[in-house]
Length: 339
Ligand SMILES: Cc1ncc(C[n+]2csc(CCOP(=O)(O)OP(=O)(O)O)c2C)c(N)n1
Image 1 (cartoon, rainbow, N blue to C red):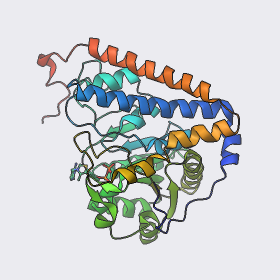
Image 2 (image 1 turned 180 degrees about the vertical axis):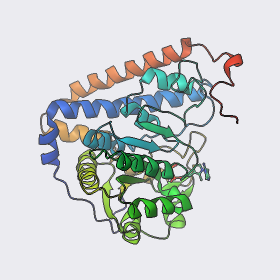
Image 3 (image 1 turned 135 degrees about the horizontal axis):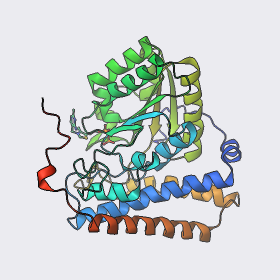
């Protein structure tokens, strides 16, 4: 949850205007997507705890409004890259719940044929799911360069990263180059307050991060309340329009907090129960649902029904994953780059 003590200057966007623009049907679709993400995370974690999923597991729970708002506002045709916390973005960009769940289970029918696992999901427009902190940021600049080189003027390259990546050299080199070459790169720092167990204020020297750093690289910044779908949608829309029209990079900071530990093996003892309770009071799904109910766009019962539908989709995906074969060991060398 955004810390009220901190001097954030949130981007102003009018929720009513966003509601009108997206309309009831459009908002129902976005709510459904957020419910699907939440359900996939809940059940993916459960499968992990039953020993069905190996490797790491980083939940996006609590941050759903950010990437959902971004893809809704800017469209799925842009380039995207993100970190290991990648289940939501893959879903939003068209990976099916079946292929994601099968990937978590390490099955041949998975998104990366069971070779990548939870941290390495891809789609036509999603360069990854990449696990080296800060390592993917230059890739996004490369994608923006390709857009400019090919004179494609209505798309941008989005790079989602955590606050922890801000201390990496590759992040700063990327900002510098994107600004120097006027590349339509939209860097999105999802400031969820923690880099593993380290609080952001103990790791990053400036705050608000985007507002400070953007000035150093002569670019525009936006600070968004990452729990508020309407803020995210409006902010991403403005940032995208500016970036594409001017062919300029922008730096966005979305203030949020993850509901889970860093990964499934982190009990998050560094955060008190009370503070987690306060954070969860601003659950992005609850906020969106409540606003829609207040505007009579949906009823509580309809939301329950939608929730059930999304749960069933995820349960079916689990069955699909369960029933799918493991990769044949003889094929394990396939797709490995070995010069
Ligand atoms: C170069 C590198 N150093 C360290 C790690 C180990 N590591 C994995 S996640 C993480 C914390 C990153 O936090 P943040 O960027 O804030 O993202 P969040 O997990 O909060 O989404 C670290 C240090 C890594 N994967 N890559």
